Image (tube, rainbow, N blue to C red; front, side, top):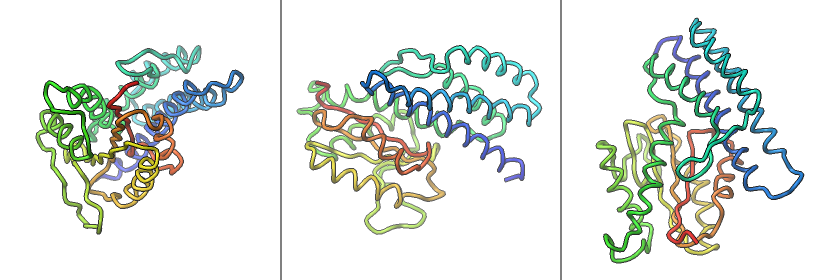
Length: 264
């Protein structure tokens, strides 16, 4: 690794963190119902503006003059509405956040760093979200998932079609007692942990497991950690699960998503 790669990694990680925070606060603002409470929106705007400034500084530092001018024009446009959003397949997303990420991924790829952690995780999450309809299809399976192993087996089989290097129960470079990851994708350095929740009391147990896992799986061998929570019915809102990682301040290399066997 050259001396130039280290600060570039740091700069990209900082932009990713700003985008991750912007998205978190933006989603929180959508779920809040207090009529006069717009604190989350204000914080989300701050992180989008911060990401723009960080990207401008980075492109100027790298002497990417043409790219700098493009981003500067986008920045001026974004100032009209930092929280401009559109509806994605499953939930709203911040338009400027995605624009920034395109440039960040381009810079990362040009310097041999691959996609950013946020983009790698997003690709995997999108596949798993679409897989929900398959793993709950009674024409393919005799029943809805009834335990964690069912969720693990069904989703992993689908992921294997997209990631040929996926490993089941991948070994850690430093084995830790009672810590054995469910799935691993070496090409993106991503570990996936599946959790099965049927009741509120089970959710509390899973919360403790997640907090323990985030410590047990910290290893240079695996950069990202994704928790997939399967609820047989809606037990706890996804924003509450997400707040767990947010409170731990673990950064955007850790993420969580919730699947519900019964959307109602």
